[in-house]
Length: 138
Ligand code: AMP
Ligand code: ZN
Image 1 (cartoon, rainbow, N blue to C red):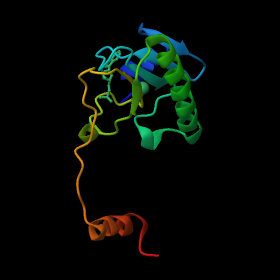
Image 2: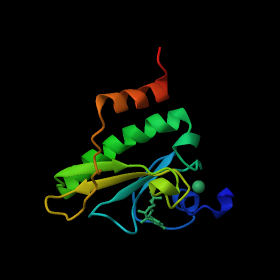
Image 3: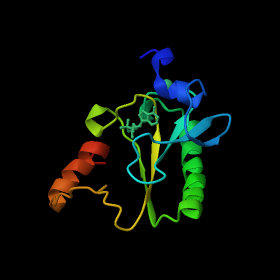
Image 4: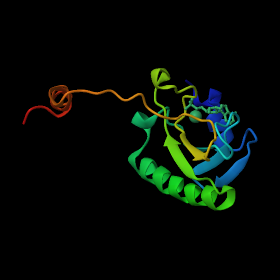
């Protein structure tokens, strides 16, 4: 995709207005237009990367530091009871906008959301097969 056509590039760089919670030279943090819960925010790097694979290492580190800062802000101001970080890569994983973004989702008792996994129950042998597929047998 051409970056000229990227909606999050335009939002991050202020060409399209957004409900901004925080901005610095590298990032803008906005409210999600379709929030899962009150205060659902997105960290957008101003520089375009389609996903985690393309994200420069120093940006990746800075994103997590900013997530921590925003977590404190949201807890203090909205009194959330918990918080999820989520980051989708690829359509199969639910990514709908191809500009890296980190979801910050405040959680409240009885908020009705269900951001949980369906857990498998592999045997030790099955876990070992996966481990060796990833890192080898050495
Ligand atoms: P993902 O599914 O991880 O790609 O997340 C995309 C998120 O961006 C969704 O939660 C959308 O609600 C949100 N979104 C899409 N367009 C906008 C927009 N123009 N401003 C704010 N949030 C948006
Ligand atoms: Zn972009």
